[in-house]
Length: 397
Image (cartoon, rainbow, N blue to C red; front, side, top):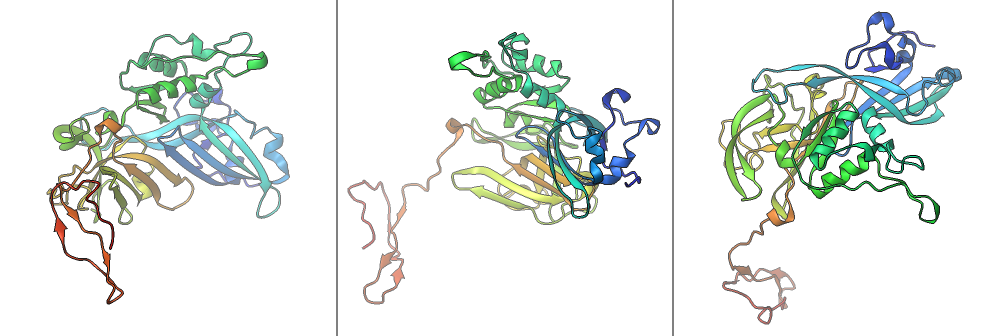
């Protein structure tokens, strides 16, 4: 069995051997053997739920399985590199290693490329997994959710504190309801803590997710400009008025063509798109260098520079008038590999009543017509102005 220790970012030792959010001292590390047997570690952060780490482990002779390394709900610590400048006013680059408790949510056994077995374990943030399991039963029909006091964001705040999470919250007066456990003919499970949090978030049109031990419970607009490594005054679109307003925001600069001095190095031109259903709706993705790219998280704001229509140019001009501020929605990377970090981002969502239809005056262009003589389609070049009634509409002739 391999004995060479590698920095896989994972600690399989028992959690009582280390203090919360501190890296395991060398004298307590007894997981060097499994480190050498780990084939891959893929990390995914998403605005949908919480961090997920997927590890593939070679287990010849079922040595680790017999030692109960892969039981469901087992604690595993993961160490990541994190930007810690949220909420600060300086432009300094602040980062550190953060160790967070995960737990095994699923374990799959299969054959390896060589001899022996291969395990694929998916680990997720333990606090969120506990929230999802906090349901009632015959002895306590409302479960843990029924023990939490408060309403709206206060309820969410108290729930997060109960499970050891910090919070970034936006206030809301939306109420919640805890569905009780029922047995018999109408048997049903009671609401979990996570069910209730998701319900309040949905009613308030908020996103709710966890990253680096912080529970985010807020709208996209609340997040925009709240988390980054630089501070500046930018023109930000107000979705209520569809007007741009100047305010101070925090962001991570993303430049294309890339700037060799930039903290985040883009590996190629970002892929960005707009939709005609909403001219302000932008979705994009990019590959960034691993050096600092593994520190990016969902909820961070990026400032996309250098690409017309999607943000200011590198000389500071903004011919399209767009601020170029977007929210990161997912970050994926291979912890042990050398591939770039994959990042997705988008513009903040807007409610339906905040959308504005765009028209081109009252001008209508005639549709293409078929030419009987040539057999080709021609654009007649005739334009009609004014309001066109349903009765006056003429289709292709």
